[in-house]
Length: 461
Image 1 (cartoon, rainbow, N blue to C red):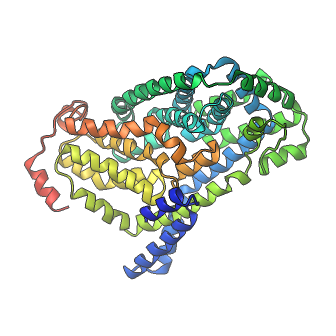
Image 2: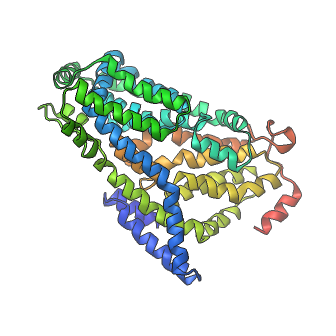
Image 3: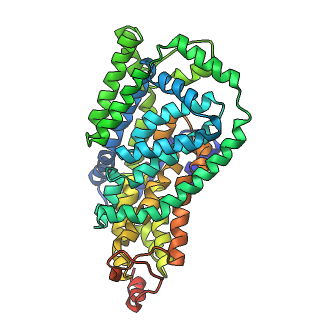
């Protein structure tokens, strides 16, 4: 199924909807043959969809925010001042760090990408930097904060499911996340030095001039994203904070930009539209709105019907059992956990399931091997949370495409934090570095020795 999906998306450059529907039908037929009733299969699909409903609401609100912020001149102001303040040679480093700080403060990679990330894409493109590079830097920063923030849903989910203290979980993740970020920033700095010489200063000046002619640019408009980020940082739930952001964008378009209420409502529904004669500006500011997110919403629903059948019929558990047979020591256990999370991301298309299922499958084995639970929680995040962006049909992959306008093939090589964390985690697993044992109080490090009874237990898996 995954091979068919990759061929359709990468080779044929088609959407993943139809292959996922075919996969859902196939999974349903297998479940029927296994003895499930049609009513059971329907309930599996509905359970999968219900799991994704919070994400669907966020996706819709992000579409409203992008449309209203474009029409309200908020994105234009962020890009205009960004072009003034940021130098192309260190832009990738700067946007990665900015997204990391914002995401760390609010605990949401999606909210960060839907606000700061959209502006960052505009600034980078205006500078002539590859959209894939910019998107990769934005994603790396956004997921750094999402992974380490105590406000993050995935961080709380991984620690909660493994019965790990939240801050022990976060501190243990620093060992893989900080080195990955440092390496990523070093690569972004190198890339920035190479692209800075190709920047057309006249193009930047012309773009800034056209934006000033098309929008009322004001530093006061920057208060809108500050308010939204501040609300989430003060633990206001994401949904009401994003609603406030969309409302403020609507009034900015009507009051500040002087557009009609009809035009502002159109921006919310259909997205903002502008014709300036400048191809770059038109490309930057035509988009957003509720309609623009319907591809992502439909993708999410279809993916979760498929994922629901795989999860609740036990098919996914069968796949995980095959991975359990490969476990021989600590290194193979953690590598299998990361691999299982990635496989779940690819098969069920949802990062939450990629944390939930492996946590249930591997928890007992970690205890049997005398490994502290924070090893499992870290592996779940390294393999589940971070790799979700590399699956084009995963809810995270389709969200990034709908929000930043860049596909996995383009940004994948540059989402360096997401690439490096799983690799570093596996290296640690096989060397024993930072691997905590239960008899260390969960905080020590140890090698890969395992009790003799563990091998007996594994033979029964």
